[in-house]
Amino acid sequence: MKERLARLKAIKKLIKNYRIESQEALLQYLEKDGFTVTQATLSRDLKLLKVGKVSDGHNGYYYTLPGDDERKESEKSYIQDFLRGYISIDWAGNLVVVKTFSGHSDSVALAIDNLNIDDVLGTIAGRDNTVFVAIREGTTGEEFLTQMKEKIPELEA
Image (tube, rainbow, N blue to C red; front, top):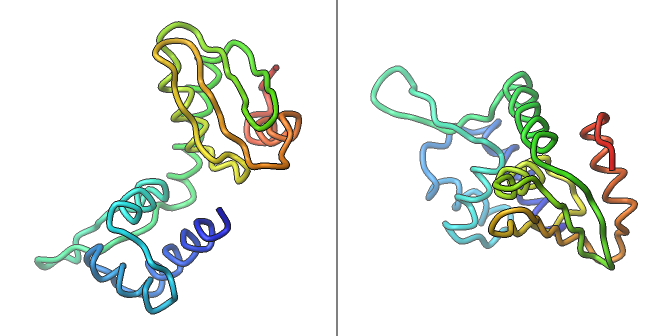
């Protein structure tokens, strides 16, 4: 996970400092910085960072990061999705179970993924009303809940 966080930080730095027009170019910059990344992983990273492409005003496009306002607005949307869909949170070991209202498991899992909590390794949305959250070894359910409450102060669990 540390490599992933370092890679995400490197991607943001590269996009801020260079005009990058393609994933291939970004992969080359990352390789120079010591990261070995597949195109599929880079695509997921760009999606997670909400990287977009903007026109240069001529006939080309380059990558750009969302502004703080966009990021805050997007996070508000995920928080609303989470609050709208969850019923309860419980855990055992490094597995957290979030019960949801029927049909809300996908949106609750997506919200958790996009709140970018460092100790969350990933989520699996059940078919209808359950989300499984894998948390980092050594992280407790209480710590996960504390991190969630930092992102969502109105969360009641």
